[in-house]
Length: 199
Image 1 (cartoon, rainbow, N blue to C red):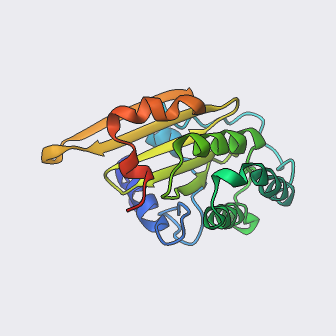
Image 2 (cartoon, helix red, strand yellow; image 1 turned 90 degrees about the vertical axis):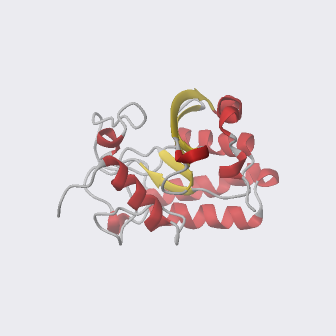
């Protein structure tokens, strides 16, 4: 199989994920996208940390149980439908039958940052989710051309990148590293509601 360009790789991952709300690996369309190659696609956004690899600790089922319980603290900010979609996405991302050696379950600090970001952004359109091999949660809104993506780090830190299609087909690219609490403010110049709001 010929190597995919960075743009085509991400476009295919988004396109394939529309049906399931989970990024799919375009090299193997049956498995969730673990994003181990994002250092090649966007090194300033998705830095891959190779140290400290080992057996997943804690185990996936423990993380899933914790995440679902922790989400209840944010129930006022999430509709029942969004909670159900989130839990289904997390279940798919933690299907260990689809993992490769060294893959790790979602980090607690990443999930907490994700929830804080959701509270700030208040999206009515739910994102597609992915995960890096070392457990950082990824989210994307939009389509193959016009989209915004985020990696949720520890301590409320969010790395984001966007491509916006403007009048005449001009593409504008931007990226940043900000607190989850400041995310909407830094995205404001790009009319973020066209990604986050349904209808």
